[in-house]
Image (cartoon, rainbow over all chains, first blue to last red):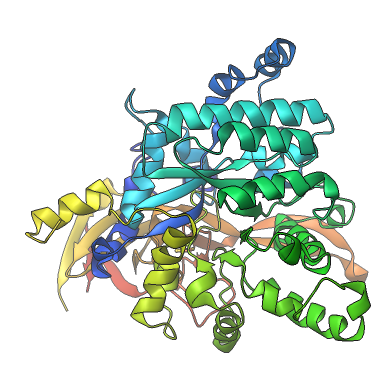
Amino acid sequence: MDDRVGGAGQEDQGFDTSKLLKNAARQRDERNYDDFLIIDVDSHHYETEAFREIAGYIRDPVLRNEALYQGAGSGGITSELGNYQSMAGRVTRYPGRRKEKTPVAPHRDITLMRRWMDAMGVDIACMFPTPMLNLASCQRIDVQVGLATAYNQWLCERILAEDSRLKSMLYLPLHSPSACEEIIAEFADRKGVIGFMVTAPHYASVYDNAYAKSYAALQERGLPLAFHAGFPSGDQALKLTNRFIGLHALGFPWFNMIHMTNWIINGMSERFPQLKTIWIESGLAWIPFLMQRLDNEFMMRTSDAPLLKRLPSEYMQEMFYSSQPMERVRNAKALEVTFEMINAPSQLLYSSDYPHWDMDLPSTIYDLPFLDEVAKRNILGENARKLFKLGNELSDTKLARRQARGGER
Amino acid sequence: MVDTLVCSETELADGKMRLIQAGQAEIAVIRKDGRYYAYENLCPHQGGPACEGVLMPAVRDVIGAGGIYRGQQFDEAEMHIVCPWHGYEFRLSDGRHAVASGLGLRRFEAFVREGSVYVRA
Ligand code: FES
């Protein structure tokens, strides 16, 4: 039955992000997003589409040759649970993306980023890769380092250097502490680099002394360290799940919970007091849970965490969190209490995660009934602007629309 | 209530959809197995274009005697409109969410008159 692949759509007219997001553009106009800055701290592109370009940046010629030969495609139905994120074509932008037409210049990734950003009213976006988030599960550390370095260089030179609305926190291959130090030293001052990122599913302990130099380097430069969630489907515990919903619902918060617990209990916030951390894409519901667990146990076992001068939740309240995927819960009070517990008006950073299947529009924040206008604008843009020391210039498309309406630029 | 012409019957193939603007509302008219359905093209989740995605049958887990799992089946008798933004599924027959029936697409009357498809909105 062709409905399962072709769907109820009108005759096939190709795929266009702006058309898919026309209702987002309507929300943007109805809520007057042209009047204020929106920063998206977690969005993605599919670097696999540019993989041959990225492979060209691999410095080791043998590895480069191998990467060009093997490619970076993912396997079919037997390869891993993560391969049906799009729910077998139900989320149409997954199969549609390949059909989307873009001009020769600027780079396709820039055009695609700008299309969804403009539709949603996002001025600045911090972009991350997609399949490479699972790079840490590759058992060859030299491949992790080689690809991470190549991707970071490619991103800086081909994308971030070309468009000041695009930023990134660059990938750190945590399994090689020395490579982390080298990557920070080489790329920290490049245009568009606003921090560094670790994909959470690393079998590495974040309190290890081996990372002290990297943390100190980031602290000294005033650059945040982000932990981006992920779901290694090869993880022994997560292998017990048989549906993507189980893998994703548990996997995304799970590794951030482990790293956060280790970060807190080992007093990393005391050892690197100026280093800001951001916890990305685990939703929000896990934070109150962990605050309660850690506070309760800490009161009985303070000797286990002697560096702490305050309760774990007090340190957690000073960290930053990205908003997506914000849980829509039956009891709306739970979300409101969560916002209170994490000091959302100053610590929460809007993120869309676009184009992934569980993306959130700015309206998920803007329409919350318990936030005032100032808090909404803080979460949507101001908190990120201050954290990353960005300017407050609206996007060129917003400025053009404002001018067309006769408003101030 | 105003009757708005959508198209002639021959212009809407089975399993396909047409969009029309009726006042503020964008309405999708879907033809499936000879019947016509009309819903506002606006998802109650985050406002996505709910009717511009795919039509899929409901998925059922097949549980045999003694609670034994026997695999999955498509249930062709219950077609779903799947919102392309995040995958919320709404029953084609009445526009209600497949599980949370308190949630649904705004429904309109679609009918055929003298070979043409109309929506009353
Ligand atoms: S907007 Fe329709 S599923 Fe989210």
